[in-house]
Length: 326
Image (cartoon, rainbow, N blue to C red; front, side, top):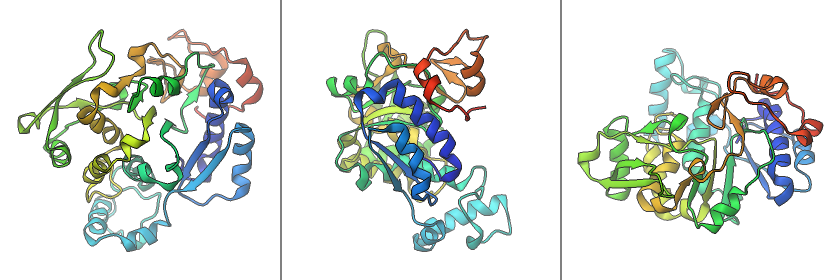
C-alpha cells in the first residue's frame, strides 16, 4: 500500500529485495494498492523488478473531495471537527490528502483505515485465499531460509505475524476500544499472551469486567492472513464497528483490527513467527530480528556495529538499487 508517486523509490526497493529473498522461487502475484494517480510509466520499473511474477496496481480511493461529499453527515462533520483542532480556519474544501487532522496526515490515516476494513473485500483480492502483507518500507536483508506462506497453509492458520507485541503497541487504551469489541462479538479480551510450549497466542475472554485491560497487538508491517477468515461477515462487521464514524482518524488502527478477531474467534490459529523460530531478516523502522539496526542505507553499506548486524545478500547487491531508508 502506497500513497502515490512519492513512494515509488521505496516501493521498488522493497519489491526488489523481496524478490531475491523469496518471491523469485515461488512467483506469487503482487498487488500494490495506491491512492494518488499513477500512470503506466510509473509502473514499468516495478513490473521489471518482479518479472516473471505478475504485479497489479489497484487504486484504493476516489479523489478525496469526492469522498468527502459522499460521506454521511456525521462522518464528514467528525472529520472537519478534528481538522479544526489543528487549523481553526480550515474548511472542508481545504482538506486534501496531506492535511494534518489533527496530529497525523490524512493519507496516513487512510492507509490505516483501508488496511483495517476496506481491504478484505476489495475485488482485487477476491480470487485469493491467502495474503502476505509487507509494508512498502519493509526491506528483506537475506534469502529466506523458511517459507512462511507454506507454514500458514500447512498449519491452517488465520494469522501468522512477524511478532506479537513490541512495536505493535496495545489496544484497550480506554473503554471505547472494548465497547467496540463487545458490540461485534458479545465478548471482549481480558488477557492475551504467549506461553512457552504453546504454539499459538493464548487468549482469555470475558465481559465488562475486562474493559480496563490493555492487550498487545501484532506488529502490522509484515504478516500473513487467511482471507476467507478476514472477509467473513463477522470479521468485516467487526472492522466496520471498529472504525465506526471516526473516518480518517488514527484512533482505531489496522493492527488491532487484524489482531482482535483472531484472538476472539480463533486464537489457536494465531501464531507468531518469533515463537516458531522464523528469523527472516526483514528490516522495518530501524529494527531487524528484534534488534536496533539504525538507518537502512547505513546498515546496507556498513552494517550496524552496536547490534553486530551485517548484510550478506550478494544477489540483491548485484541487482537492487538501495536509495531509501536513511
